Amino acid sequence: MTMNETIMILGMMTLTFGIRYILLALADRFVLPDVVESALKYVPPAVLTAITFPAVLMPRGQIDITMQNAYLFGALAAVGAGCFFRRNSLLASIGMGLLVFFLWRYGLTLIA
Image (cartoon, rainbow, N blue to C red; front, side):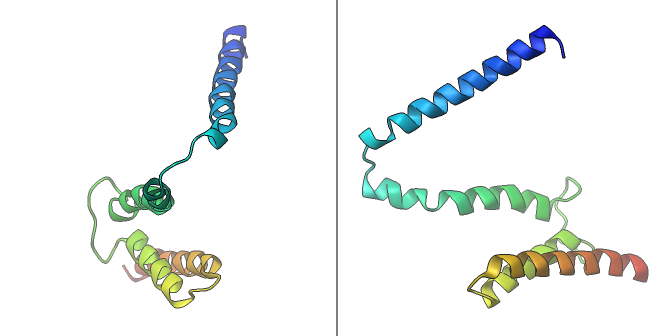
């Protein structure tokens, strides 16, 4: 690693730490309105949806809502498992989604 790369990494580290430290240090001085706090509860599901939907619906760069899209059926199985196993459903959702994905992907490969 060259000296320029080291300086650049240290600079990025300092800047990132400084921004986060300042925001965390001042966090107790700001009081957000109740509407904003309640709206912030929807940020993680919205971000997760924004990340997963393109991967599920467009695995090859184009919309693919066909029987060959194993990502779609794995995601549907994960959502179904999450709805069925309401309590402690994360592991069940991940397991069911992966199981259906691999069975769908490699099952269709064996059939075709």
